[in-house]
Length: 284
Image (cartoon, rainbow, N blue to C red; front, side):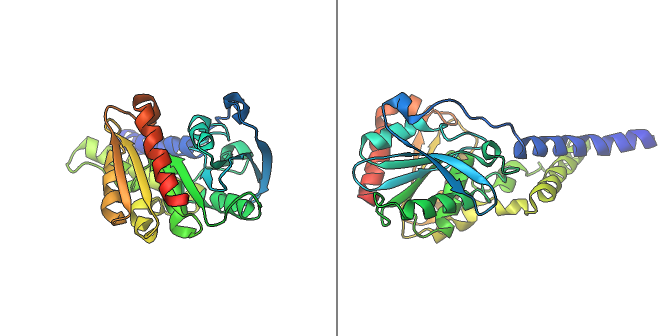
């Protein structure tokens, strides 16, 4: 009986630890893609990080002086969102993409919160470039980088416009809420989710409740926000909670039939039109 009790406690705790460790220490997902694959010239940039170390980026020049920062999703490299970057460059925007902490060898991810530091580093770099208008810099992030984009804009007033796609509204609330009830399933969930929260704190030294764009999105106003989510993705609940908290400056576009990250595939013409109209209105 004692062994069974230990096993019942240890198994969900171990699974929670392994899950969280995998989220925070995934392998780098970089590819060999460059802006040249889309016919664009680019500059190979390396930036000193305030968190320690250096990370690499692509600066892709446009013609209108306005600039969009595209932070990496999860553990991706600097070429992870070049398809979307191509749309922006094609309409005259400078674009700066950069690699994740995992690809830069800068330790674990924090799933969006500490990644704001790299956005700040990128912003500092862009502000000294003569081909960047300091009053016309925006940010565009997807998934965990969508959460980063919102939290970065809340902290960095120089970011004048925000596009956030598919990110969580509140990580713990959206994904770690155990169902009410009794019995073994409820017990398993409670221990499992508790293990995730504890492991996250042990690795990052952060309370997992910091992962909450919903709690800070109201600090962005009066700067505009465009939220893009698919009708088939589970993070849609996070979109609605952010929209409710953001105020009148935020707009939510739900792409009918789209799953996580397939917005451009499902509605390519409307995606391009909405994205460019948003940045043309806010940055030009």
